[in-house]
Length: 472
Image (cartoon, rainbow, N blue to C red; front, side, top):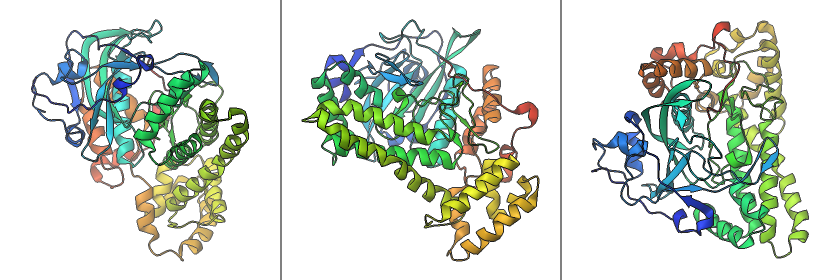
């Protein structure tokens, strides 16, 4: 093995109750689909011409210095608390400190059973692996805090879902895999010592200036407010915002039934398991506040007087909707060309969104159309847009360079659901060409190009994706 990952593992030094030590389960016939060379270099990984690359990132060979483990956590799933979840199909190989000085987790996802598998097979099929690879790297290019994809490998084995499907393993990189649910599991068990240990570790790793629970809560809330506002600004719907899918680091994590809106509607839902719209597009702003309330509850035992801390913690949580509104205003203000939007600009933005909803206008193309003058083409009644545009043009007359502001805020390309599904279908049949094309196109999503003009097109009626699936 010539591949060298400069592991510097810290989570593995925590008490044994935080995880289970487990090695990946070897697969039959690994073959490399994709490897993110640029990311590997950022992580300080060398020996990238290793012929055993597929075996390493399938879990058949454990790299030197790795300390494989599956993390323990709990979580609220669709509002219902599950006291023990954990990595049921993932193994954290270890950590490395990148060229940016940031500590990064390197995790195999779909690498076999762990003690937390709960009767699952611990495997992933090819579709969700490629969806997460494409969407997470597109999100990175869009400027959204996110986990990254380092490698994808076919296993040469079938996994059984509704039918046999080709298996695969994803290598995921994250600033950490500590979740709200990681705090919840120890709080619910009344294990204050473990909770304090986790808190001290998370502070040292993510918020060194936030050394008490209230400051830590505030830091995490601010990251999540900014993250969700960023999601909303690009039409992204996570699909399963359970507390075990909510990262303390403020990154987008766990791309299960995620999707991007085509036509704008605030109640849009794609996830097949979200039957009541709990995690709809617009509901994400409320749900992240709810998730932070669960984190606040889990942190209470660390306070000198937990009962007395309930009121100030509640007051902190009640401030979060305003944090989100402020972040939303900045993001959407930029989308209409306002570098420094004022509170009164919220009505201008909302009026446009209301018109788009009634017209079923394409979210991404309408906002991008404000730059090149094609926005009105997305309205069945262009006069409806024109009425709004008169007020908008008067407002941006005061701006120095609204076009540049809009170009930086409005992507040309998003990973449209029908393109992702077509790519998965092709890859399942052995054709990785569409995957490679999407990866190249989404690497530069703000730049118009005649080569990717077809990827801007919304789906036809027959191409519309009405439901997305976790793939577990």
